[in-house]
Length: 461
Image (cartoon, rainbow, N blue to C red; front, side, top):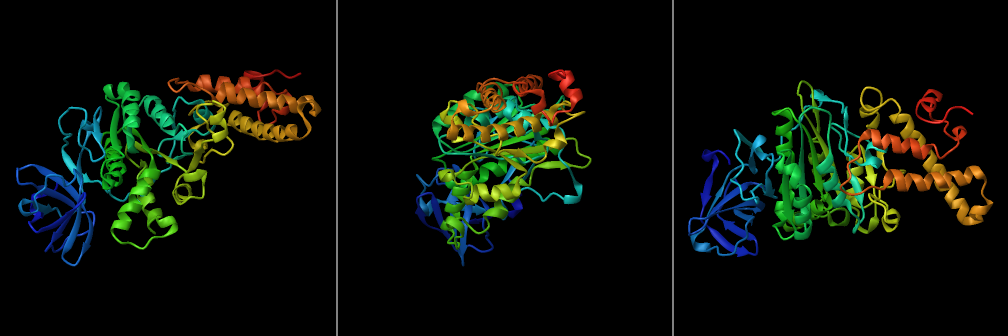
């Protein structure tokens, strides 16, 4: 998919090492160059340059080296990174991690091709994120509202249902009456997980509102590095060429970082923290910062990266660096999961730093922000009361303290807990929030203005 005048062909394949082809006698070849490989029987394969030393290049063959004859293989270097066709032809399609259809349809075509690495966005042209992206998940829409143009990660633990939540959001998300699309990139999935993603998102895909890129665990490592880049490239052009608001769901970015570490090791680079490359921060930023809104353009790109914290360690390099780059976090709780709550989101640890830009009067509802603040404040007090009850017993608590335990139970069971295929409207979410808040006496609802309490809640005593 690159300009034909840039291709340079070589036939000096020195050896094959698993999925790698070592090519000798090259000149002017650089890292990450896209490669076309011609086999003796006329079939074509593709690859990326992993390493170059003197006149020797190491090429990762995306389809594997099985059946390749060293003496009869020709390799052509493009002189530039991989390019993909862009346009609305991606909508409704399911492809593998390198953009090849796996849905039985023809290759995706477009009016032009662009580099998967994207183009830097002029900071002067950026507009602040605004307007909500509603997920249909109460704990998110009500307390950590996602905003168009935001990057808001989900921090999970191994074994928790983060993929289930990612699929639910991809299936249900909406953003007003303007054209809206979802790009879902599955990275390092098991075949069972990939099948779950396809089944869950089938309806939205059939409606022409979804792009699916599914990289499975036994695909080449380098493909895991390409998958989010292709997803974001497709999203950028759906947003800024076609005028759509696009939500990009990336799951799991820890698998991406592991692939980056493996490729770095193959290149012989000096490792940094926990053997990850020293440029992990800038590499992650080059992906996350591709979201946003551009002045004068109708569309937007919103990114929801999902990642697991190895050993539950939030200081692990991947969640740690992600937290520096993004605008908040949604954090899973292992304790809630063990209690049978879905989604097991720890509301007090979670935060959307841009929520005030996308919620409130004119965007959601005038009671949204004060109600969210009151619910979180009451939840913090309820946790303190719970700890006290564990020390002195529930019977020794005051009636007011016991009402906070009653509130906490309602918060978890009535607001947070919902079925994976249940899409709640914002009105339903806020109604549930009021019902939970009103478990407390009016005197305890100090963060809610009296006029809102009169309208939605308890009249004055």
